[in-house]
Amino acid sequence: MKDELKKITAGSKLVLVGTLVWITLEFLSRVIIGRHFSSEEYGIYNLTLSIFTLSLLLATLGFQSGVPREISYYSEKSPSKVDKLISTALIIIMATSVLVSLVLVINAENIAGIFKNERLISPLRVISLALPFSALSVTITAISRGFGRVKEQICFQNIFYPTILLILIVVVILRQYPFNYVFWAYVGANYLTFLALFILIWKIKLVKIGLLFDSKLGKELLLFSIPLLLSSILGFVMTWIDTLMIGYYLSATSVGVYNAAAPIAKLLPVILNSVAFLYVPVASKLYAQNRVNDLAKIYQSLTRLVFFFTFPVFVIVLLYPETILGYVFGSKYITATPALRILAVGFIVHVLFGLNGMSLVIIGKTTLNLVGELTAVLVNVILNILLIPKYYLIGAAIATTFSYILANLVRSFWLYRLLKIHPFTREYIRQITVSVLTLAVAYLLSVGLFEKSLGFQLIGGVSTFVMYFGIILLSGSVSLKELKVLLE
Image 1 (cartoon, rainbow, N blue to C red):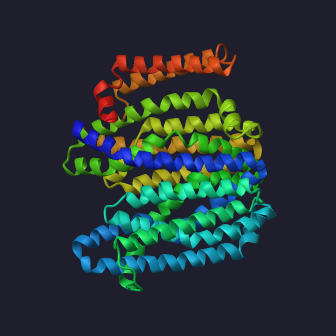
Image 2: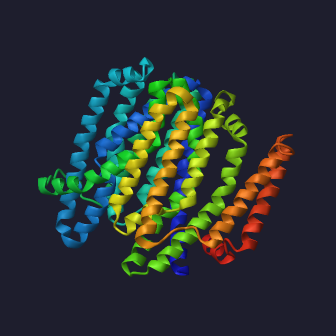
Image 3: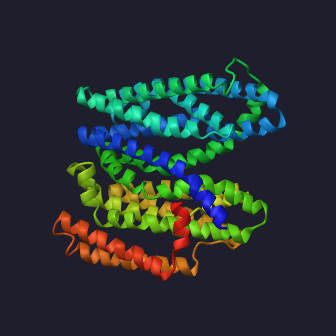
């Protein structure tokens, strides 16, 4: 088991670095926009971005997941068809992305009418120009993954694109351009990313670019990818539905305030998501060899390690949301404090259960995983409808938190019923107990010593977490061997 754990953690290093760079740069872009422009304009930015993301999902048709599998399959079974498959995929994406972009331009006024904000019209029309470039970049990256390459994903999607976007946003602000120029920055960043990717694959001759279209291959690719598109849409709904429904029921200003809290809370599962990238192939191999006990141990060990490093961040977010929001986004967003606390609870519970959804995929029960996601999405939508008009941002946060908890309970139920796998070993229960006690101590200090000044908060916080890490290690909840493997 040690070798498998080492393989996952070592392989995750590159992915984690790329993910952290992407999250940091994307977060900085949000912070700069949120601090420089009004909360209403920041809300318009988030609404536009959510509509653009949905449009991109529809335009790419699930190819970002389907293309790698099809290329890998045909590379083994029929290598002569690979070039036709790639060309067919690119032609389909060019057509669908241009079509979706036109639909977005034509219906910009109608979409703005849904959210009762005419200021949405211009941003939607501008950002629609980025759609074909973004869709083609996603597809080219998927093609490179089909050949077993992750360089394009990490270097271009995770680093190059958000870096260019951040630079262009800074230029917009330094030159004091109007708010709408932020969306021209998106167009520029997507165009430059596509251009750089295209030049790279042309130079290294990764693929032969041509106007080869095979309707049979296209149909096969679509049939394989459409179910994956459904799963992507469910993921979009879980991520963005609260933003869209706040925009519908409340105002762009409310969207802006809420989206100061949401990105901070969504930082909590970053380690879990990075580990997931390499967990799937390693755990799939164990399952194929019928080594279910080893699979269970890997699942339990990774869950404890990820929770071990994530929990201190959760404590800070839970106890000092006003300080975080004030320093990061500015005082105008402090009203999002209750929402941030509630969302943090939802995401730490998500981390607490570990990679249950990925484990269902590994054992071939993708339908059950989809059922869990679909259930959570439906509950999320219903709760948003019921709670947002009455409880505003707190209602949206409750809906999202409850749906995440429900999804994890459903997935964990099926995983336990099928394989008797769960993360709650005696070591993990001890770890959770120590974590709860640490939270209690930190809370007592926060209403006494910590509240006096930022200096006292830092000293008390460091002392509390030194105690937390020490007790966890002494209790044997997380072993030094596991930490050594992770650090290696």
